[in-house]
Image (cartoon, rainbow, N blue to C red; front, side, top):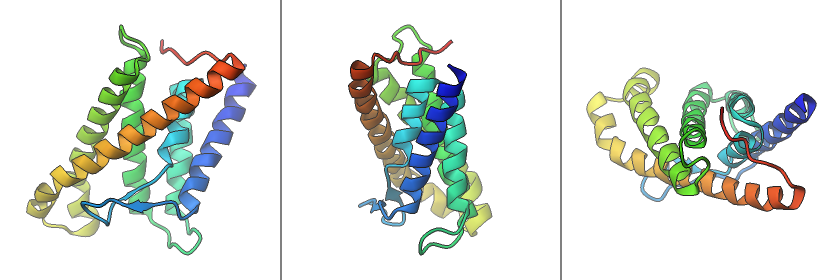
Length: 181
């Protein structure tokens, strides 16, 4: 069983890293410097299939990809930090939903993943945007509502698509979801 988890984690981490390498980003309409992408979908899928160690490990691998030079893109270590925090926060909320009374309910997972991502990234933006990019904290505060809507949107996409993929795959392959513990 351990080998299956390691192999699955490697495959899903590779898929997430590939999503970072390919030009799949869509500018967020309210603030085009932010982009929506499918990277988080295989990360949530890793959590659902194999548990938090798998999801968190795959997230670190995918985020590290951003820090490296990529096809036509320069290294982006700051972007790697933001992406890693955002995806880890999403997984944390989803993981918490797997450990509550209504284990694995989609609505609860969407709610907790979104709230966790918004809370973590609002804090991270307040602390790190001035540090990394020299932005005035007052400007960051004004951007926070738009960034929160972006994080809500990305968390909903990640969890909803991963959950649907999981349900389709698990029913065909008789795979049980990771159920916390």
